[in-house]
Image 1 (spheres, rainbow, N blue to C red):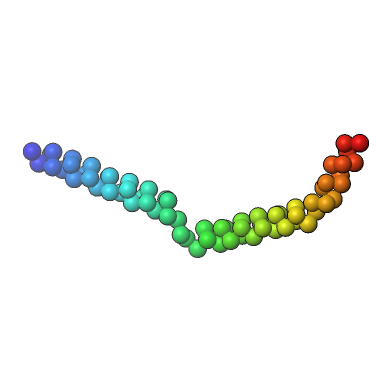
Image 2 (image 1 turned 120 degrees about the vertical axis):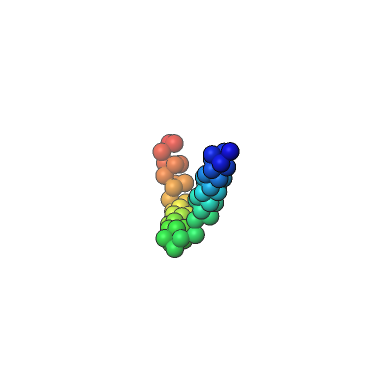
Length: 67
């Protein structure tokens, strides 16, 4: 009987550990993670501004290449 209780306790501990690790994986708020989000956002914004600034040149190149 005590073996059953011991197995149930270990199973419950494993389930709790798995739940904590899954929660930690989904809510990653480490400083490095936040920094990479900021750097990635800045790079994406820079790419968008560059594309918009060169849109006329891109359209002209497409027109010339179709001729």
